[in-house]
Image (cartoon, rainbow, N blue to C red):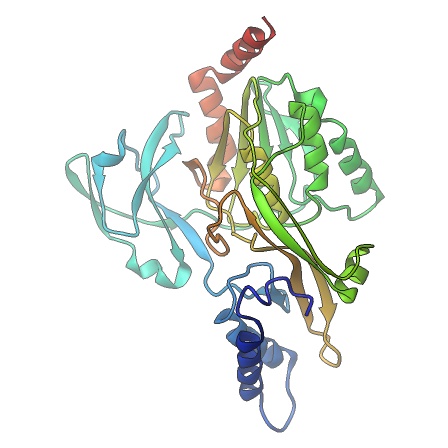
Length: 367
């Protein structure tokens, strides 16, 4: 009743069918382990929903998470310079020297990695393709930090906008008030790799100081306010639905901004990414994100007896477009293995003289 995607994914007909299948997968007698119960719930759910936020025992209900693959060291000047079988495609990238080029990448579920082509014709020559996954592992720790690259460009990093203790709370509150102090940076990099939770309100407040106005991401949503959801989220709204949306607008920025993303950028991290994508002169670098925006504002409860944790979104939403992205993610402007993204961005800043260019843009705006 409190799951925002209940009617969207088929309502009673779909979920009653999933329930019947779950019951059929459970043994009629004997002990049922927590793992058996979890799998019996998940299997029919994965045929019912495409929602990366809905989890059972911390496992997502989305059926097949797509992953990014690339061919190391392969670069060419134009997309038409390469011919390869699907799912390989020519995409923009950064060379180790920082120049914009093209490479071959693919995005598909791990179970289908065997369908990646073994050869391609690049600049008129047939070559063998040795594919590797773009993402190796998630970034851990680092709830929020501010550092600088060797050239002086400011680097802000966060793996989650949630406070684990009072120290984190103080740092996040300070971030929300600090946006204006970065407004004159000619180049700013936000590293949101593996950012998977918390509140995007911190970055919204930061954004207002950074650009001079609140982020205007194109979006629409409906929040399901049941008594349980209201209790878990500490809402004071009356039970039913709360609906809102906006058309979206590009926010001007005299300077350059980068956002570094990976497969583990999910949910709130993707909401933050969409806010950053609404800034003029921004490039996203890395691999496609996880794709977990069909629902939002998740809450969790534990089943009696088993203690199995169930997490569901209380808000159904669309960000930027009406196309579903769960399990697919937001594609980057420049496809680079996330572990190499920061070094490539730093090289690009020097290669194209972006700090000098950003300063010139700000001086031009002031004059």
